Amino acid sequence: GAGVSQTPSNKVTEKGKYVELRCDPISGHTALYWYRQSLGQGPEFLIYFQGTGAADDSGLPNDRFFAVRPEGSVSTLKIQRTERGDSAVYLCASSLGSESETQYFGPGTRLLVL
Amino acid sequence: GEDVEQSLFLSVREGDSSVINCTYTDSSSTYLYWYKQEPGAGLQLLTYIFSNMDMKQDQRLTVLLNKKDKHLSLRIADTQTGDSAIYFCAETSNSGYALNFGKGTSLLVTP
Image (cartoon, rainbow over all chains, first blue to last red; front, top):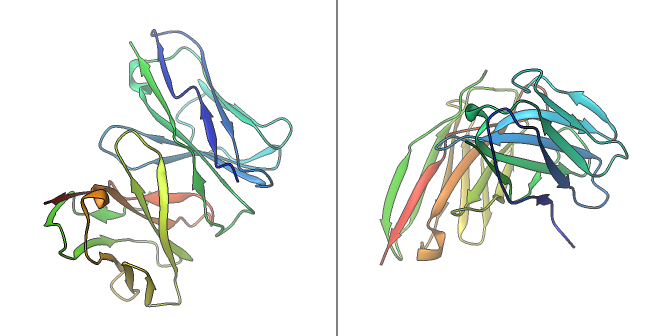
């Protein structure tokens, strides 16, 4: 079956602009995760959804970052007033359940803030 | 947060075995994972091991877990040029769902 998909694959924006990044999880997966991977680093956890609700958003760096998953499937990560330091690869993952379930990752969205 | 440590770089000759090492800090981690990332691509799950096991073999891959020392290793037998990639070790954090990743080990396989 289809894996996790993310759009766009690349996004270039200017400092101060608003961006939305989309994630389509594997069908039937109730848990969805966003991670951020900076150059030369491993992915860092941002937020976790179980169904429609954000069960843990403790990894979001500040209030410019927000994510939604209104129907329990597709999720959108929203970044307001982008800064150059937001440039990174944003990875989405999904899993069948929640705790200790294997997470399957999408290809990521490469965000570049000029 | 907890730190997962990996050596940054490993170079091997084609046909040799590769061993990638990782140390983790959260003794309550239920699962430990190895992911592979090729240039410009996302993370591909290679294998994982449950914390009550000390070894898992899957074709060319062997995972060894030493819980006492919090040490995890990935051995790739008969390494091929297509195995060149960055390999990430990850542990489940004390949340039970978020993964803590190391910085990755860049494996270069030369002919």
